[in-house]
Image (cartoon, rainbow, N blue to C red):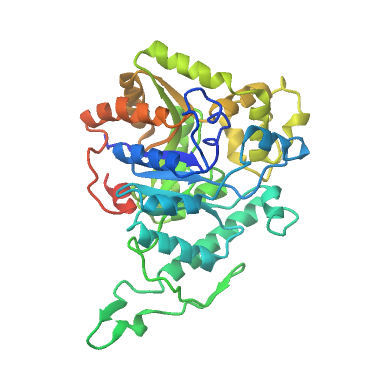
Length: 432
């Protein structure tokens, strides 16, 4: 069995995707989520655990779907506020040495040249440890912040994203690897014959190039993708080095894994060249009883309002108007995150779905260090690989407990690295 890849999941917000972190009694009192220290500590813990990367999700607007206003999002601190993830990772590049750093940027709103320039620069500053999480965005609230009345259709978003990536590749490659000479004797900084215009002209984007940033340490930043619709899985299979999936159980994870790896082959890629990381929320205790008490506390903060707000934001449907005790229809028409519906069974009521989304949304693994390590080993064996994206319900102690109580057991079993062997994020990804 191959070693397990790990990444830590954060948002530059009061919460960690689910709006309970700031309220949880074990979240450090007085921590300032809008200051660097808490994220520097999370990065240090992740690096101590020899994780591949630290990844920050992001969005570009406060949700208005639930109840038709921003009130619920602002009240609960759910994507309102959320600060910029790229800026956060730029700061952390100077505070870390080994761990990869992933930030989220939207193909629907960033100009391709600007994004290619920013990401290549941060790949330089991090010495080859940067990853771009490619999102298309999904909400009208985001679109309206950028002068649009409505968001592009699901199909158009992914068509634009594919072209956006192709343009970025050409910009990143507009400087050949050996273009920079720094020949002081002859006064030649770079060979002009190895820096090229790209003259890109597509359906959505146009750019002459070349990029005015030299080729970065990884050649281009690593690509993360988290779409779970057919279009999203195709985009991930074609482009990504890291694929993030949030699924409710081992069976759905196995089906997703086999599907995406098969799509990679269809696109002419080696399935080992991208690692699929499944979102999990490990809650670890010195005893099994202590761990389950911690889980109960997490669940107690998940109100129906919070869960409905999360579903409304993700799917673009105002669930405040729905009957909580009716089944959550799998046939709802949405241009939002269509994969969210697949997390639930046809028999699940809207109340069931709201409760799940409010407290975690991810698969919980609860128990002692030994139990969680065994559950992770079993899951990877049944799924086929590759690893987990760790989501914490309280900061920073949940991650500390995982790193101190689970990681050493996996290392002793030969299922996780004891030291970093490579220099770049792609080195970590391709190590095993």
